[in-house]
Image (cartoon, rainbow, N blue to C red; front, side):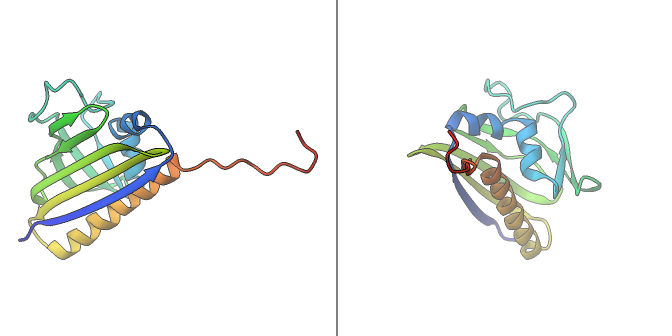
Length: 162
């Protein structure tokens, strides 16, 4: 078993605050992950606690459902570092992983915001297959992020319209 490290970066024309609120809300996570995976969050959870009191403590069990139907993994959702508005590190025990660490960094970048996900993990089995899936999955998450927050283009107006 070897540790795999992958990194994904996107720049979107929105404020860091907008991206932070999205990234730490159940709604935002659901949107980024779907329809590939559905994460069943602990009952009543709407966002990641940011007060620091829960760091290092599991927030509860989360089931991963492939296409929203087939259970494929279980996580004890745990955040170990939090810089509200800028960065979090989620380091949750997973059934499928010996180790898992996901860091999201949100930084101002000129006329927008840079979102960087760095994921380090050690699968318990099929390292190449799992690494491929995680890479494709985070590519999907960043594609959703760019679509959700991408440039809004003005609609063409007929000549002579004001």
